[in-house]
Image (cartoon, rainbow, N blue to C red; front, side, top):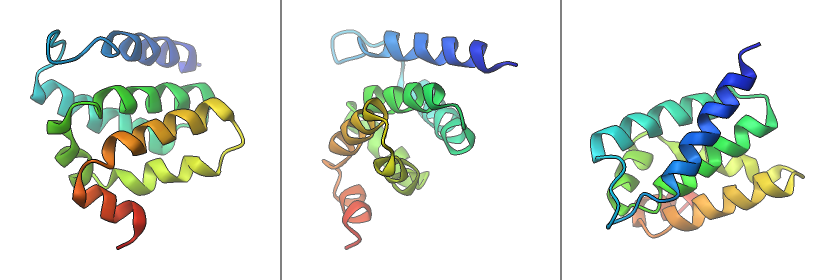
Length: 116
């Protein structure tokens, strides 16, 4: 019943975060950390494919900021994200790969990805 509200909210956040960069700081590190925690928690329990897609879009957008990579590592996000590589839904796989590419610049996260 709340799926539409959740979907529209996270889609809006994802769209706004697309513009979050060095020149245009939309979120500070603390806000970004809280958002990542909430989005990962939602992604873990989301059954609705569109909500999963929007969560992964947010992960893609926030993971462009190298300072947040330690947060992703601390939260054990790699197994949560990697599971979406098994999907047949092209858009879901696309954002999963984008998130993993962004996060792979962090050595610790790269080791988690490759099981080293």
